[in-house]
Length: 451
Image 1 (cartoon, rainbow, N blue to C red):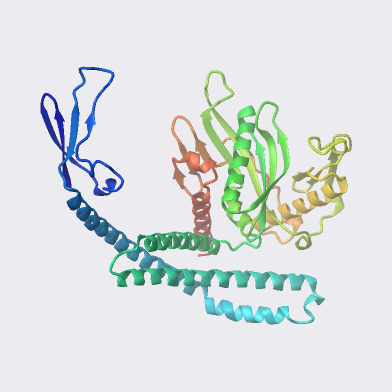
Image 2: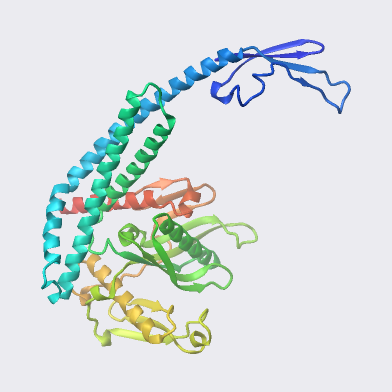
């Protein structure tokens, strides 16, 4: 609608036409429609003229046009929503069909029968595998049925809206919220379909080590630690920093972060490698551009009972140091921190979070076993003794991802090619696009190799 705003001055008449959205004005909220004339005068200057403002559109006509145009816009929103619901419904049906809901229900019946068997715990390892499989199948069935229920709910809202004489905007908002949440859940489900490794469903242990770059590298390590903690928080995972070595001036030399949550290792396994940052150094008085590196290693957080791996004592180099930091005199005076090195491969782990040397030794040994199992899986070795050393080198030419803060802003994954200029969001834990692109890249490579 075009309105005409007339401004009357004591000395002349000024008239101008303006184009404005009707929804921005409301006769009940803006007194300009109820009082057609306003007088403004300046007490600061006697020469300032008196102004009166009149709106040329009658209040009754305005109300009628507001209602009609609002209704028209609501209908357009509804048509857009209905199309989105149709697409989401079709997508959900395809995912439920490809996941084999009926097959999963048949499998559930078999597993429940095994779980109810009185001889289940005669073989402890087999019993744990059965119960774990039972939990997985139940969760998948629940998730798929949730998809179906949400589709039915949003379709009901659309059908009710079509039958109504007027459009209820609260219904539309509810439907939009459901569709948005459903699409996000479908994206997540499709992502888990790409995870097929033996440890992908487990939690994760992330080890971050500052590499080349001095104080800047140590600050970069601290930034990466925060990034992964923010990502885990968005995924509603539990996190715990179990080891941290502070830098001399700023940042950290190294840190170990435990992430507890389903599929945490599967999502984070692609973060293993060297991460490179380019920025204006905050530790350089001249503000010169600095390139720094950090090494990130990821291994599964495996329960102790699943680590039935035997490592000969002669293959282990165990050393003890003082842990330092919090914990009182015990950790500062007694050598409670434990470092274990697997001599044939050079793989080393350190544990210092417990007050007892024995507890630290057990935890360090479990982490070493988990790390060796992952390396063995990657190298397709049937035994621990067949694997090679697999350490991440935090230096030039080894990076998997570049984070450029200056002279432009860009984060790019070298392997998948995915990139974004929204570096602030990435450092705030928005890693899902990188995780998804890497898993797709890994899956396509696997298909190419098998083909």
